Image (cartoon, rainbow, N blue to C red; front, side, top):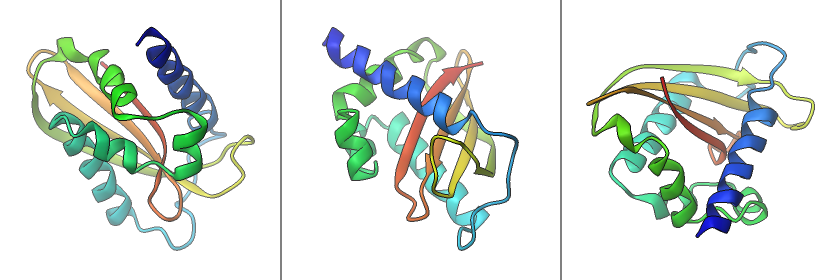
Length: 142
């Protein structure tokens, strides 16, 4: 289990460095619509707060999922890091921008879903490829 958590943390760190290491906010890539990307992000958040970790793992782009060993257990371990925030209350806002990174050469969308939980606020950062497959995921307390 410790190995899985270490792998998950490595995935999250890589996702953070790769996908949020942007050179500034960019417009969404051609063919991606803000509302569709925002809705996809809110759907991932709903799966996370409902404990549907396998569905979240399955929503990853296959090669990303395989390369970083993303499983229901690793997603659960990530959510355990924000467990002291308490239960989900509501989404307060969703931000959607285009991503730009030297390490990821394809266009992608980066989202931040701000949520109120019982004890603390949580930010869910999710990046999507043009097919709305998850390519990056990070969850953190404010």
